[in-house]
Image 1 (cartoon, rainbow, N blue to C red):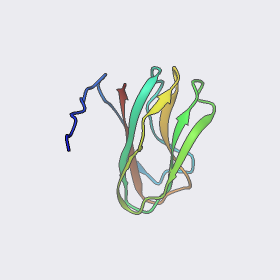
Image 2: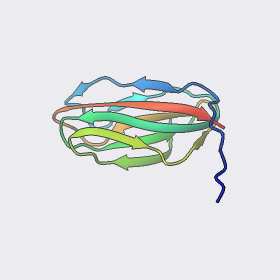
Image 3: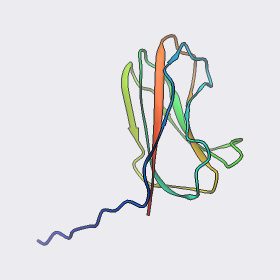
Length: 119
């Protein structure tokens, strides 16, 4: 059996959008927001931690930041949270990715979003 080498290459630099450590945030608090992104295909990861169990949504938002186009809910236990999207996503011009807290938390939470444009 012959293994074929698949080239690995980078189209752009990855971007780290960090969020602050928040104490006792309320429902709907935006934990991290990439801001408007250029149109393209992206790999996305959300990384953070909480001192308690909590719930957040990783959202793809439209260019006006008025509508959630796609959302994935996560329910991490206390401790570190690492969520890697399993596939590339295509964003139109000025769309964004953000993490939003669902429900109030008595404790600390923090999230960051990593984006990388790929072919």
